[in-house]
Image (cartoon, rainbow, N blue to C red; front, side, top):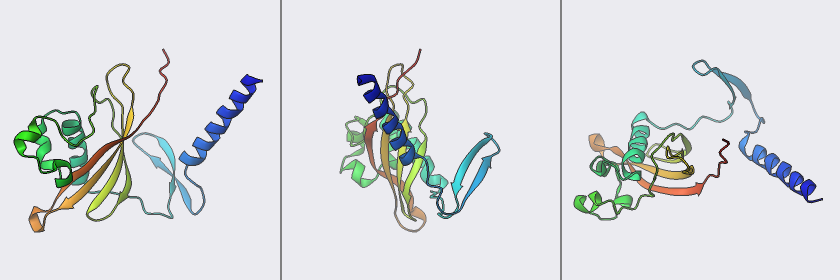
Length: 172
C-alpha cells in the first residue's frame, strides 16, 4: 500500500509543478522558433515581454561574478548601490564582509529571468549552478536600480539574496 501512496503523491507533485511552471495557453499564443538553438517555445503574445537594457544586464552579471563570489571586489564597488554598501567605505568593502549573499564553488551557469521591470528598476531571479562537484544550485533574487541624474545616471545592485536552494539528484 505504501508504494502506491508514494507513487500517487509523486504524480500529484509532478502535476502541481507542471501547472505552476508551464505557461497558460489562454489568450493568444504563437509558436516561436529560436533559429540559433532550434528550440520551439510557446510565446504569450497577449503580454509584452519584460526586458531590461543591456547595461543593466551587464551590471547584474558582473556583480554576480565579482561581489557574490568575493572576487575582484574593487570591480564590484561601483556596481553596488547604497543599500548594499550600507555606509561602508571602499577599504571596508574590499575586506569582503558585505551585505551580499555569497556564492561558493565557482559558477558553471547563471541564467537570469526578469521578474519585474520598469524604467528605473528591475527584479531578477538568477539560478546559479556551481561548478564545484557536489555543490548544489541555488536561486537568488537581485534588485537593480537606476540612480543618478542626467549623464551620470547608471544601474546599481541594491539587493542580492539567496531565495532558495534547488535540490538536484545527480545520476552517475
